[in-house]
Length: 307
Image 1 (cartoon, rainbow, N blue to C red):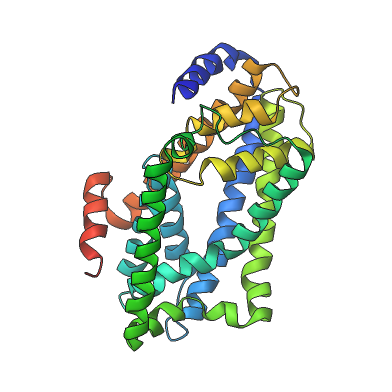
Image 2: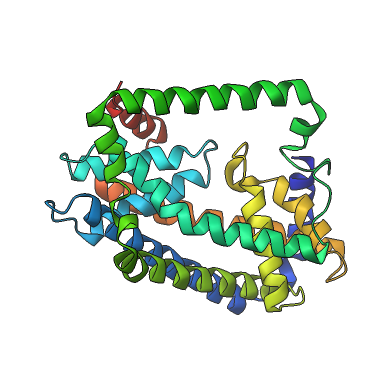
């Protein structure tokens, strides 16, 4: 996190040079990207619950609220809030099915992010995983702890799979969330198409962020910045990958601009997106729950989880 706070100081030094018009366009593309994602997620829910009249507005609100919480709380707590708000609006849904819809929603993202990462590897621009600024660098320095964590996660996955196999009802509820994946044409039309459009908006947003902070703005560099975004949130130890992203961006975009400018771009993008997500999420959460007390909201969501 030391790299992150250093980047904050650099950002304020470079603040006067920010291109505010490009920054506004970048946030505009980011907003459109979110809206496109909500349409895809609503279609996944419609396929999972054909008997329900799943409307776009409450699903979009739940999705945006989750994004806002994830921006400031580590551990993907926003996903829990998202599921709680969807179930709060549609009581007939179950957490088991809703959890599996999140997996269905990220399936294409995983494929695209992996392809981008492999592309970056072929270019030889991905730095060593032992880079000290990485939040998860310690995992590679403490092999015994890493092995324990991996073993525990493996046991947990095996236990969940065994439990699901013994309960036909649980298996059916979990499988229901993947309904749309079984219809390739419908998945392509109602989910993949919207998500691909959201990826175009994501790259466009990064291009304008690069331009706003006077880093060489090209599609190539925007794609590299996307690789950084994907890897910095691989393990959610910090909100939005703060700390990891700053060190990684300087390494992967080395030579495209002075280090101070790269740090300003990194923290500027992070700050702008975080403030935007949190403000938008706060408006949505207050409209849906009439409260902005995050601890109370998380408490409600956890209390509503099935045992």
